[in-house]
Amino acid sequence: MKLSESIKPISFLKTYASEVIRDVFNNRSTVIITHNGEAKAVLQDIKTFEKTQESIALLKIFSLGTKEFEKGKYKSLDKAFESTSRKINKFKKEHREVSS
Image (cartoon, rainbow, N blue to C red; front, side, top):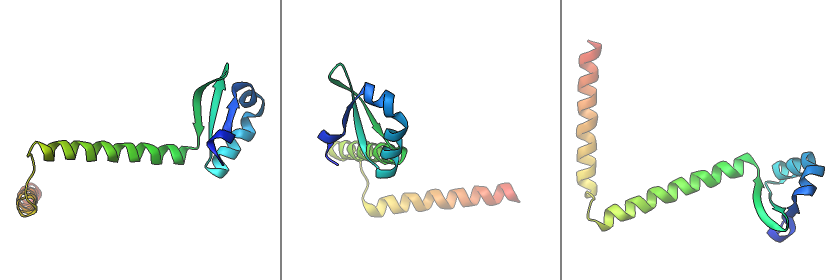
């Protein structure tokens, strides 16, 4: 469905809330709700919302990583694996001491 076809006034939502929500859920569609002729809210199913939030989080992580890279704050792959291996071995050693 085209976004322009899914713009509904709040009065429509008030009258047909159950049907609109069922349609949004079943069709994974998005509905723009207007009030006094202006877009005020977006209605979407929870799965689409969660995917959007996950995508935003990944983009933020990517952006932060890019900034760190541009500042020269990165390790070579070999150094990263060495560092991770040391941390794992340290954790294993501490875990063995605690469980003994």
